[in-house]
Image 1 (cartoon, rainbow, N blue to C red):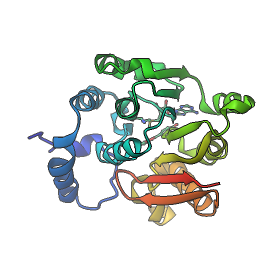
Image 2: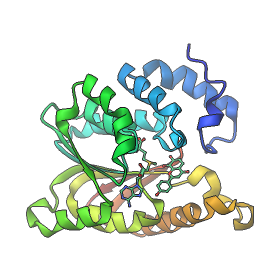
Image 3: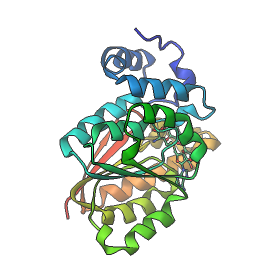
Image 4: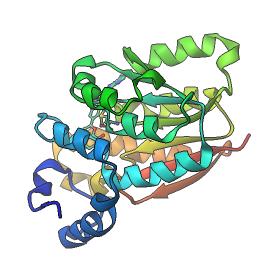
Length: 238
Ligand SMILES: C[S@@+](CC[C@H](N)C(=O)[O-])C[C@H]1O[C@@H](n2cnc3c(N)ncnc32)[C@H](O)[C@@H]1O
Ligand SMILES: O=c1cc(-c2ccc(O)cc2)oc2c(O)c(O)ccc12
């Protein structure tokens, strides 16, 4: 069994307020079912100075089920880092499925790329090194892209989540999913502002504003789940 004694070194504050419960979930339900390729990529990321940013494997499990249910041919990822969520998506879409993956940092993507290649899914990925907003705007300039994506995963700069939503809701088809990570920001969305450390304040404010925006958005059905760091699942309905 995997030793996760030191997990807290790599993980941000988690939503579950009990380390023992987190350990129980990971050891009984998550790590034993994690595909080898994802395990390898997660381990390759542990030594990265920003390794704590990687999508958590328990959130990945829920994404896997959503992807399997949707069987998406055309997907979008905003915020790739070393590629945990990207590889997970690539492993769970059809052989001819495609992922447009956007990140400002190709170097981190290259940490996971050998594992992606070894898993035989690189052909599904179109990696674009760029800030995401101009790329999304470019996609929207071509009307054939409107409503053409089945699935989008958004896990980049939290301060732009509302801007990403306004664009990606037009790119995803009715019935498609938009999934957002970190929407509970380590539980700090519910903390009094004065208790929040300076470095976490803008992320907390962004998550609060995003959650309010989504709750009021009648174009989507929406579930804010407390898995991982808060995973918000939105289904476009109009
Ligand atoms: C939390 S990490 C993504 C984690 C990734 N989903 C995973 O599974 O490991 C956030 C990523 O967003 C990228 N990023 C930050 N600002 C961005 C922007 N404006 N446009 C595109 N990517 C951005 C960062 O370079 C970083 O790799
Ligand atoms: O601690 C973080 C920080 C980020 C982050 C900050 C600024 C950006 O431009 C992008 C990302 O993202 C995180 C994340 O996605 C996570 O799962 C845990 C922690 C952090």
